Length: 401
View 1 (cartoon, rainbow, N blue to C red):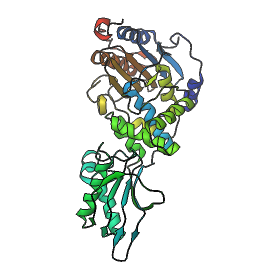
View 2: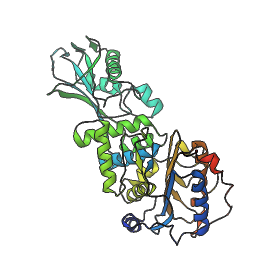
View 3: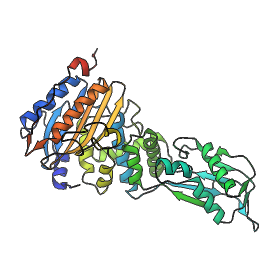
View 4: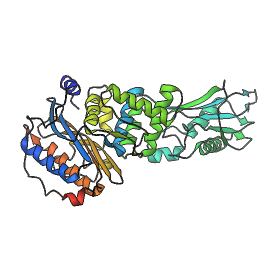
């Protein structure tokens, strides 16, 4: 992906006027405006050309809207910036006992997570992710360390940073490790349980998650809410030592502010209607990320129109197919689409379309037509074919009271 850092930086710092940019093609502006009128008064949009630094289209761009899963843009941007593309999340087995000369570990084994959403059994992780940290690997390492029997139990850390097979709680993780140990002939005397790791416990074995670039991909392509929430907790753990949703949300909010992309972030996934930002601020996030070293991995993690992820069945033909990489978002009465389109001209555009108070199925049609129009720009002018009929406002926008 080509970058246009000087022009992008200028766009981030520019003072944004109230009307659409004079340099934009009037036909494109008119077409985008028709679609936004159909979306109703609770919707907004902003489009910028990152290649030349020009604003292309504005429509109530400064008003914060419900983000839905566009919140994941903020979550994953923060995660990949803090951990780096090759950063990982570790899961550890610790203990505060002793290993005697006969291979008996006298004490408990404590299983402690740091927010890895892929952690689970080998069968599960290989089937759904292709790779990932597993209880089977931990059992192997403990076996190689000489542990042949455990007099206590396997205790799963109950802080919320340890889960198993996509969402099962810490007790399930402890039971999974217990079973993996038993499978290697390592007897564990007491039943697995949930609890907390005591101070002074030493690390006996550890496994790492896939790279952060891959975790972000597993989050954004299918819009995985569980992955997003775990990443936000991991962000909180890394920044504050306390891995709660609230901790992570504060870090993500601060990161957005640093990029002049101010937003209200309350969770990682966008399930809460409290997650809000304006289209202008979302485009500022997209713009700022385009200048960072992590951009290529972050960009590659976005769904591609007509090809994969949540955009696999959308924009399967036309200029947008394969050219637009964007994050979808859906809640009741909310539909959002924000990301990038490389137009026929070769210019890279960033856009954010946040539609609130709409029927999502109809709103998605408008968003797709807007993305098609952006992608169809060649030499600064919208190319044929002409746009389709715009759905009536009564169909797309819910009646406002």
